[in-house]
Image (cartoon, rainbow, N blue to C red):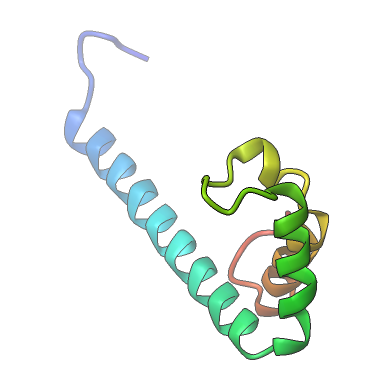
Length: 90
């Protein structure tokens, strides 16, 4: 790579493409999850119980450490993404 002759237009186009693709993936994945979750009320109680177990104080927000303990939520998300296929395999 020639550090004195950087093609900033090409580089910015590549970064923009990656940014747009990542936004698309995130928004579609979130929508897929919400639609799947909303259409499957049989899982609501199990996921709520798991959330209450890792965060017994409803007055505070759940942090990343607590989310990593939510195995049922993790499985539900992975299955949603596996079935829909818009997200790469986790």
